[in-house]
Image (cartoon, rainbow, N blue to C red; front, side, top):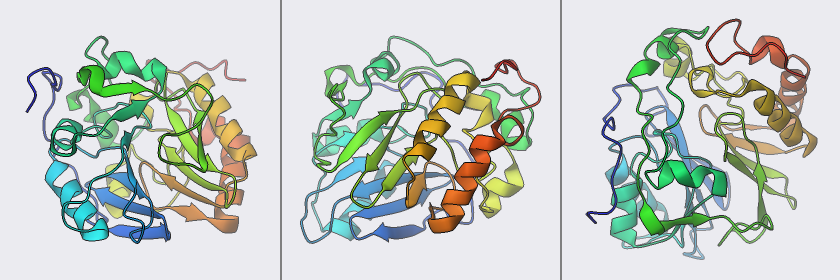
Amino acid sequence: MDKELSYGSDYKFIPTTSINSGLGLEVLPDLYSYTVQIVNFCLVGTPESKEFVLVDAGMPGSAEEILAVTEDRFGSGSRPKAIILTHGHFDHVGGIIELVNHWNVPVYAHELELPYLRGEKSYPEPDPTVEGGLVAKLSSYFPNEPINLSDRVQALPSDGQVPFMKEFRWVHTPGHSPGHVSFFRERDRALIVGDAFVTVKQENLYNVFTQEQEISGPPRYLTPDWDASYQSVKSLAALKPSVAVTGHGLPMEGDLLTNSLEKLVNEFHTIAVPAYGKYVDKNIH
């Protein structure tokens, strides 16, 4: 492993899982979602083309599983053109250093996310006091220190294009993190959400384990800006996506997605925003 690349000193395996761990779903012919423990990563590209990108990089310690899934879908020795990040929280970059070293590919993220990916700045600490279930209460054990990808990570193009994802454009969806992005394709209105909203109550241990599908805002224990989160959800709903692959929970599509997003926008204060917590600001508009 390159000496210049490093995880934060609080980086560690997180012993949480769900019934969907190990489940891969072909959402579209060129959009494959796979669950590692409690989080999803995406492979974007058709197996026939052999050209693809990896969106997000799983939980700590998941690199070998991501490699196995990638080779199972695209063939032995296959490697992506790049790794594209929705954001840099521990459960979305968990295997990234091993993957970067193995594949020798570039990493892209929003420019506001780069300090957290170059070892310069820690994310706000998770809030175990926030309203929610046991996962929220355990969140103080979750890593928040920055990883250091050095010059292996670079900013996404400012014009909204996504490298090697020709028809997708990135949409800035802050709130859960300053440089959080989602990816949207106009042709079929496919949306890769990240954690701007999710389809499981991520704070509740039972819901996380069973993966009971229910639209929700971003994970409460790691969301410091609820006003920005609300604006992000509104901007994604306005795109009228036909299918959404979220960072947590099962993909959602069709009328269920349309109606659920409309409900989330209209009832964001009660569905998404916790009743209490150190990052809660009741002046959301």
